[in-house]
Image (cartoon, rainbow, N blue to C red; front, side, top):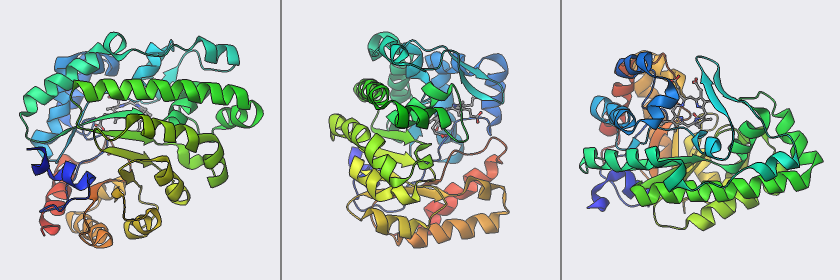
Length: 343
Ligand code: CP3
């Protein structure tokens, strides 16, 4: 049965009748149904109430016809269970109240136990699987150790990652201790999601592109590699980063059945760099969805031409869909991918 899902088939580089497509942040503020739920509940409340998280996860499947659902949650959720105070302020993104700044802070971080620490997430996964009734597969996800470490150390989003790099360069012991803890947390968190019913996993190393290749190889690769190794091959694993054109061969070495790329590189060139033994996901610039329909269709065609109908391409944006995006344009993009990629 599962082989009938184009998304899972493409993850395994099997032949598909058309290129499957989903969108990062596909369940979110560009949808009016989401915004009206958000008027009544905080973001964390939505994540922690399985009925609401289920309803939101299904919105883009019903409304824009994507080929996979992704569970409504956030990469920062497991940090709360590690003993970190987490808040999301409107418009300014996440804030961590007690950032990690010393070896003592690292020692104090707890390893998580998903059954006890994130039961709402596991329940939401089970409930989405029931509601989907096999229509499309469900993706679970986690942040990668580097991107999670950057939030823990900076206390929120950062432009230059100065605090993070300071720890890396000045306190190798502390860096290693933190990354090793995060590897264990990511592995436990993801295994919990797979057990609950997630059929593929995306590992978001969103901010890793702030590093040069040598630093990636030394400070990140061994840890990300352990995550992929310990997760094994129970379900397909997608390894995503932004600004990562120069890191692609190293990210491939770290692991993943599919590598996610943003729009700063041609898809065809990225795939050549990575090698055709793995799949590729991407890579429409999310701001193209503000352009007129003919431009959107051209941009879709250019990406499909770059992939040349080779098995193993999953169409996506190069990063999350923006809150102001017209829903019609998202739907038009999904339809264009399906239509233009018919084999
Ligand atoms: O893709 C999906 O639809 C699933 C849900 C999902 C969310 N966050 C929901 C969310 C996923 C996969 C994420 C991942 C995530 N979260 C990442 C990695 C991917 C990426 O986009 O870079 C990161 C870095 C985070 C951390 C995070 N969470 C940030 C930086 C923000 C604020 C961003 C913003 O645009 O305000 C969030 C909040 C968040 N996560 C929202 C949603 C729908 C907005 C919450 C709201 O309604 O106010």
